[in-house]
Length: 447
Image 1: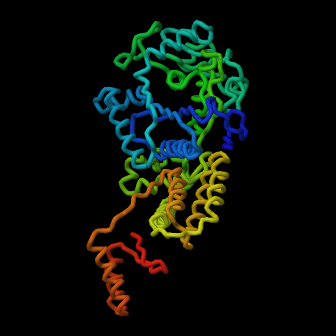
Image 2 (image 1 turned 135 degrees about the vertical axis):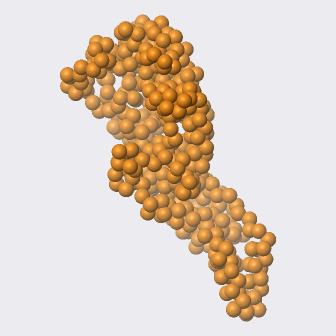
Image 3 (image 1 turned 30 degrees about the vertical axis):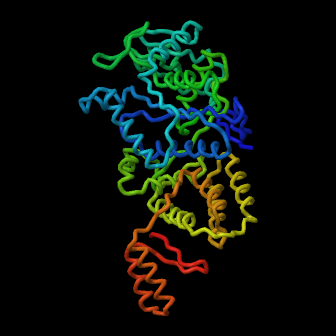
């Protein structure tokens, strides 16, 4: 049975879906004003791995991940580049798709965009006003936090704690609010900004309302899993709960999941520290599958540390697994332990998708395979485990010249012309082909 650490209850809970063997899953996607950074990639990889494991266990997953395609950062970047916000968003959505493809991330079932849901957003806000959960103030609309039951429980905070922190605020927006903690559902546009007509003003939605609308429109009033980075617990996901449950009267999400931060050389990633790295640039020097392997094989809730050594280790480990997967098959392999490895892998991953323990089982499995146990059934089981981590190896075919050299070396060895055999081995090594003589015959790997 799969157990999930639910952020809301701070407990490990058995996963019971709304519909048997189906999972509705909404994961917050990027605000598309630039290329994604390694932190964005960590979240995308973590939840893709979780999705893949559900599918490994026989679930059908409806995976939704949005794009925020209008906000202050997009408007600013578009103006700086003499583009419309939509054109800028289109550019970076295309870049996101290309970069995540190199990371082996499966396309979402849907990638809703805010601009396509403006009518639904306005209707959602209108209903909150009608129910007394929201109010208009000089063209803006705010949510009344005091009317939300157990507000901020997701972030393990109380309303009293937040009120103390908000005391003394005097900025212009606070003057428009009944309470400093109230958050924007609709914001009137400044002169020259992109806007949409509404009953309150020409403007655009607040950030939090977008995900509530898109999630409930696509997946329904209650969904199985909502995920995102730990930085989204408050205020984004906190406010999603408040406004969604105020509008529908139902539990918004049954399981809240949050992935940990990425540090760079033990420092928090930030532009001010000069360690801010986009995935687009990183992929110019790091193989996408190696980066994916590094990100996917960590326990999703724990912070991870990005270093050159960590990437090097991931590359070495991935090569070992590839070499294992491409071993020649045995006609009659011993399969007594196959079921044990499958069970151990399932137990590890059922425990809140513990990828670190899961990949340990995979390496134990690989060691057993390398000791002489490999047929088509074992290869398929091994490949299915690798695929959970987004690792899919293509069968590599040697060109005719390389195959001829290997055959010449085997002939030289048979004739006991070891000097010629060694010379051919060196010639192949110079081309990145490493040979290993086994009792089943010669096998090769590519360095």
